[in-house]
Length: 108
Length: 112
Image (cartoon, rainbow over all chains, first blue to last red):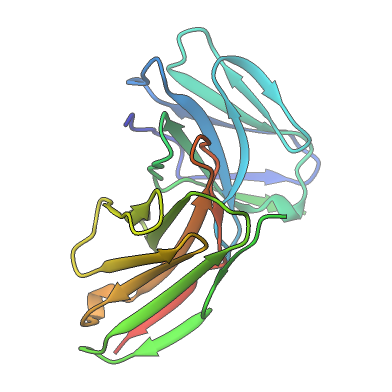
């Protein structure tokens, strides 16, 4: 399974757009890019998944360039409740491999 | 909503004890997983199961075993608990053909 690299931490302020980039240079043709969110003392929660170009849902957008070697999770107008750890995964089976994620801290 | 429940939120055991962690899901998912989460190491897969009575080793199965006698229930067993098994244990379930996993709230196990 492809290994992902993402920043260890990011800071933002309420109302700002946050973009978290993940690199996955060895992504395979069958891999999908998936993001999970984890709040303290809770299990991770699925946010969004995509294969290429752009995917948007009510929570976030996912941008994937043509070469698929990276992806960007975009959180519009974050609030304090978006403070969490965000994990980028590349998957082609139901076996997930989590890295250490990006710890996003949102300040008032 | 999918619900994955774990038998305990917090558990304290002594070295050498046999420990059972139970996980139940209510969405008829085929797949179930056990992870442990440690600071700086992220989530690591211990065991998973694609069907009743089936089990597959994950990345760190040593010191653990699992049981899946019913589709909705997946148990993690520590045959002889050790202090290095102090961790947060997370259970998840998912559909056979899907990538999305639904996680329980976790059990924080401390082994003294």
